Length: 104
View 1: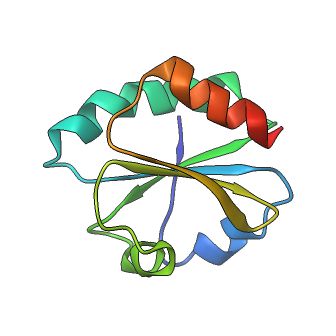
View 2: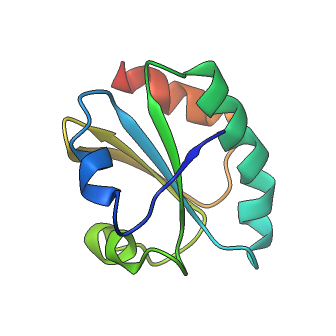
């Protein structure tokens, strides 16, 4: 399962030496609910190689502001503390795998 990002653990996660994938979502967002199981699958498949996280936009405003999130779902791909790619809107698993593989 993907790690939940909070205002308290955001900086620690961003300082990770492994690549980070963050799914910005909300409970009321239909497309977010479609992407959620895919993100959880990716968290299991890439465990130990990529830190896959979820950020509820209503619970972690620090991350929303830090990354300028305006639409959800948005998935950002972070390497060495910098955003290197972004997926705005729902995406299929193969699309997300391609973006993750570029991080490795």
